[in-house]
Image (cartoon, rainbow, N blue to C red; front, side):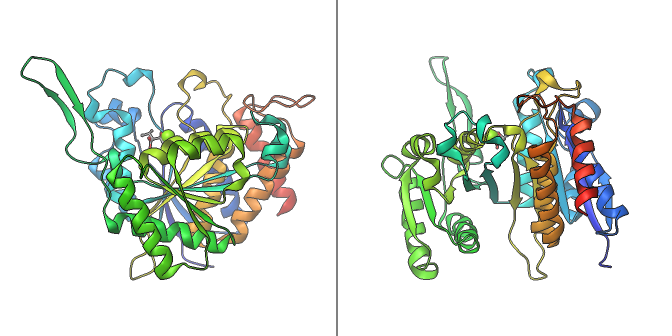
Length: 369
Ligand code: IPM
Ligand code: MG
């Protein structure tokens, strides 16, 4: 059996701990059936870390994340921390982790399960079979650009500033991830920016065009303005295969794409760094949904996005392709046959709690495995 892998769990706030507990059961199942050996540790992030330590992520936690083979993240934030200083808000913990891990490529698949075609807010015929991959640049752009801040003007009024900036190298490395994925999916790449308004977008388009010509001429590439892309996602989402875009547009478009699938509670994501000489890369896996404070602690949350994030972790960080596929199949079968959590109700199906949905997935894993 292969060496034990070191996984750091960061459940975070709100529904994070509840859904993480279900992903952990799946990890335990993989261990108990001899499919993998994991050393699992847990730490605080976000509001939970603020409450305990006064910061949204401790240096020691960042160090553990850097040392881990992979990090599985829950969600952060909630009204409880609305009034903490901006610099130490819960979200800053996640942003710092992304930055320090250097995980620049955020992969956000939006896939419609057949059993959930009716849950989409779009007509079934528009979303059936939908399978999009959004590749969002994750440690650059306006999220991190300088200058930034709020300054006081001579007349006493204030000015808030953020800066969108992208370098050739930042665009190229995320572009390669998108083209490589498209090759594996036998698909096409749509590069998204606002080259009609922003210089950073103009450079983005030029660099993507050059990269395509130099290394990926076999993969069809198109370009789209971000506003048009939002419209096209709502109009005819199946025209897309891989979308590659900057940090802020990727944040917006991935929420939109996610909703096409029927529930934010179903979508995982993987955020990957560069592969080093030893073939290793830092990676952070997290559901797309937030901490959902309104339902936290009630056992109502859907744990499937967290469980599917674990599947992505197994696939991308550990090369455990079969086990990842097994978990994905178990989730798909569960959606087709068992009850449902409250976010994706179906007529005639029982409403399951978070733990009951975990039970259903484990039962299906047991049956399949
Ligand atoms: C996301 C979230 C984060 C982001 C927040 C929580 C900082 O919206 O992962 O999409 O804006 O990146
Ligand atoms: Mg977001």
